[in-house]
Image 1 (cartoon, rainbow, N blue to C red):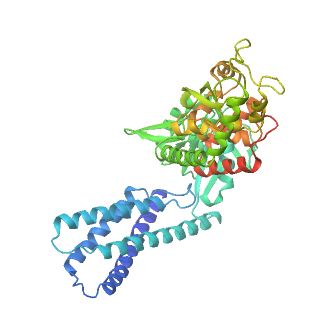
Image 2 (image 1 turned 90 degrees about the vertical axis):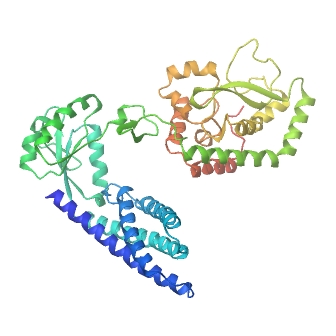
Image 3 (image 1 turned 45 degrees about the vertical axis):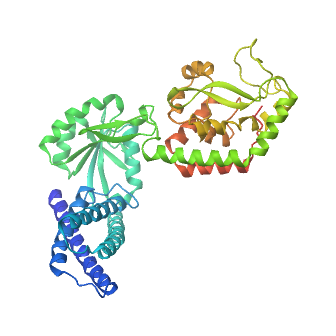
Length: 463
């Protein structure tokens, strides 16, 4: 019954899209005809082009996934499939006309049709989504689901479904992972049996989909559950218990037809990598040019107030655990750590020079790191890089510490603007760093830069 309903709904979508494309085609033809009064229109060409466009666009919509179920997606989920379909259509159509047609190509018409088609399709698909969400939130067009498991993972999954009523899912109940207890409920949803009762529950209740949300140590039971479901028409889906793993920026993709779940990945891939690199280059170059007089003044004072070079280089660990040399204005005497070895700077430790103490308190000693950004070893925003000698111990004592190296080290960062710098809690700093990596975007970077400017460079923990 569910499959029949899905097929009917799919057929109605295709029929509606066919009608809409035909209407937009007619509208675009009239607009182009009015715009080119001197053009003699070849109706045979346009007739063939119309059927070609219809087939190509509907096929494109299907290929880009516009007819897949969008119960669990929010926002403009159809935006990219529609734009991608029309861009592909425009390229293939113009290429075909150039190769096979000797007549003048109706370029203006195709542009009007594609632009109108994109706007019209996006608008009507948005209306369709909103209508179905409203319908489902009122209790219509529901899918009845059974959740296998009653642990933390299953309960969190159920909570999220209950929160998003617009998805149109009705949870029939849970199947207990261990001992089945009658009258047991989570979020108002009953536990209707144990895993061994799966076949009986499927016979007694109307179940459209079964979600396996077992805890990580019991996921091996999924194979037996799948085998039992072979006697049922219910869909089977797995909700992985990622909370049991040290996850970061999870992703799902296909590798030559094999599904792969990425657990710990850097967000700096594809277009994200290009966006961040362009932003870093433009921003750091602008800062260095604008601050050139200040940089020269600081360099002059350092050179005349103490013996040694203007700049100080130190080994740090950056992106993917790679070592690089960080550049800073020298704020301490040369070879200050020769006797003590690598140690963290402390308040009033007396090692900084007079001017160096001012540079450290105002964070101006960090200014030359914009050269690191230009060279690509650092970013404007990211987790602060640490020295290799300290990381040896930190990675043993602090869980998930090394995950912060899945992003380029930064001059400023989310942990720093929230006060976690200097000799503060490393555990809290890691939490903020990983939150930044997991939620990275160019807009997040801009927010951190803005907060850095507003709060200023002077901080009580900078010394």
